[in-house]
Amino acid sequence: MEQTRSARHLEKRRRNIEDLGLERYVWELDNNGYVVVPPEVTGVTPEMIDALTDGLLAKCEELVGCAFTVADGPAGELDFGEYRGTLELISGAKPSQFQLMQLCTFSRVFRDLAINPVAVALMRYLIGYPETRFSSHNSFVKWAGEGYGDSLGLHCDMGGVPLPWGRVSLSANCNWCLTDYTLDDGAFACVPGSHLRHSHPTLPGAVTEAIPVECPKGSLIAFHGQLWHGAYPRKTEGLRLTIANYYRHAVIQPQDDIPNHFPRELADDCADPKLFKQLAGFGAPYQSQVLPVPRARA
Image (tube, rainbow, N blue to C red; front, side):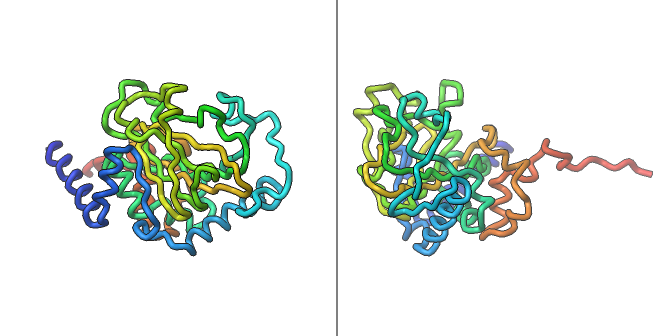
């Protein structure tokens, strides 16, 4: 029975990849641990990118207290107080970015992005067809500065999972580039093929192996949870805007407790409510009395 069920899920995964024409992108994921998918393949339009960007800039102004533009960055000087991000704390670099979280509560356009069919197909390929779930939906707002210092912040997202690691990616990431990615603009950094080493990055040697992933606005960078990755510092004026939709295997705890705290009514307002609810983990057994119980006969 279990073997038949497993074979059925593998067939669904294969058919999903073929139907969307993603075979070459899956090959790159397998071999390099990451892949860049252009917007003409994902179906994400320039209008959608503009709506996502406008939503993030508005939230930045609401939370920070000054205007933000892609061209110029924050309109005022920013004070982080005593805060240091985890990777900045390790490197000693001065923070030059912050994160916006729980994006799917902002508006429908963010929810539609989280269930983009191409992105979900790639995540299910890496994690498993029935096991893939949301972990968190975040944005990195980054401007010129030290970045993560000399280490480039190299890490892997499965770092919290005890070794040894196997082939299956227990977490995987979709980075949506809302601005152009170039080396000087603070591009994504990674060590191609490092997901096959099944280990944490070895520093400082990994820095010499890292490459910048340069791609135009609207691109999707999908990558394996064991890929050694980070980012280069931004040297130019303005902002680098990224949405990081992070997915997990069902056995892994989510970063954002979406199953228990995400407003259920918002899940109905998206392109595919059934898929959103499945990835959110709504209705899973053990959260409540979901499974049926017998009734006593009179």
